[in-house]
Image (tube, rainbow, N blue to C red; front, top):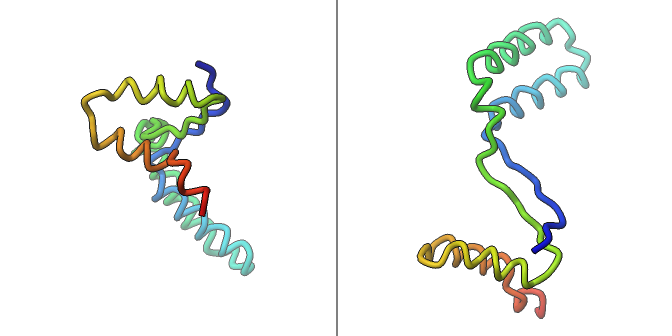
Length: 96
């Protein structure tokens, strides 16, 4: 089984929101408010450093269908997970 690509997802919505706010302030030229946002970003990173670095999900692309089938075999009794995975790879969705 060969994996073509893996992308990890992180529980970092709060950090992304602060970075978006910071970007909006920079775009509007409100440089006086950047220090306050920077402090919030620094505090969040300090307080939740491990949480921000730990992946909470993975998006895996396999090179072949056989790889997908083998990966699905790792969830033989987990119908909920297997159902979600099958929904994602259902070829019928592309026939429409």
